[in-house]
Length: 129
Image (cartoon, rainbow, N blue to C red; front, side, top):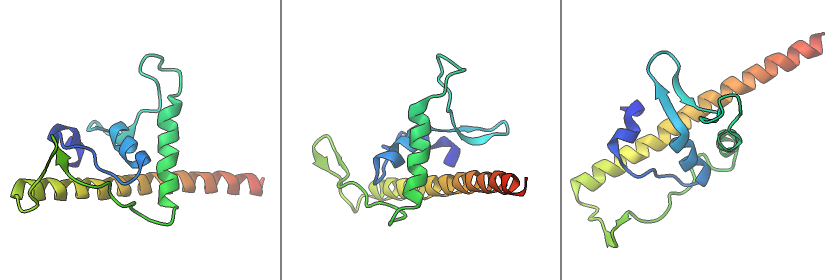
């Protein structure tokens, strides 16, 4: 289910621009790499996509900020009409989007931990040299 977020065609929901951009760039490869963000330009594979790299680190900054999840942007308005909050489809969609936010957070937190561990290992090796 998590790997198929894009197939659901729900709008991306988030409280911060970095969170929304993170999901837009988040991909899934079932052949071993799992979740990923392409940090290389499609047209120039040897060139780093600086914008994706910036989003990657902005998400890390959000993890260290004063709030774990920023407040969501207001309203579920589509075509100028508000959705009926009692509509089961609206509740189901809102729950799924909320779950997506938590999964994004878990993925970003896992990656942040991996980056920090690698950094600490590298700096420890340099200090011991």
